[in-house]
Length: 270
Image (tube, rainbow, N blue to C red; front, side, top):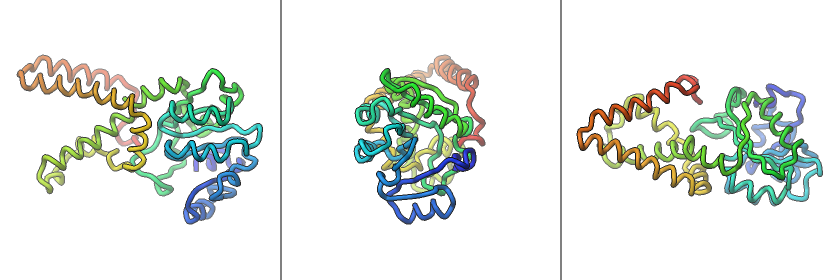
């Protein structure tokens, strides 16, 4: 949708597993051609973007390796970069660049798509020392053309950052819902206010998708969870020991830092 809106002359070919969904893509004018065969879909493509769960990418990429144009550039939109880069870079050499647009919501599927989804949203690229410079420029220009703001870092830096900025918040949201389900009367959640709804919004995300993401970034996410456990223990200790000054300091430091961040207002969040 974003590409059609901003770059209407670009030829778009879409691969998918469902003929029904591919027909919908065509009927809505979102592609020039579609196929359930990835080799056919990518035939003659200058830029190939893999938009599957990270656990599926190696098999998909292997089916394309050696069958693309020698000038083709390959990137992805997965939420984990180290495992993807290790598996895909050997298949495509310097013409593969890992990418992660930091946009979306707990909703999924074509019904959740928006043409302005990437506007002003960060997009992280994770080039390697062996990455082709022209390929990196092309992938950066692609995401910039959709309105994204480009940042580059190593795959390792990416996975450490998103473990704490994205993967941990999702894990905490799922945990909070399970805690409420386990410890509160069944009908009590109808009384929940905005704080509970906001904190658990992403727990409506696809469990299958997120179990894959968390497992693929398990080392960094587990580390982030243990770091968070330390903070939670600190709050519990302040409460148990009636250390009001310590608790106030903890909350104040968090508020001051949160208020300093250039984050969108609540009604602007995807």
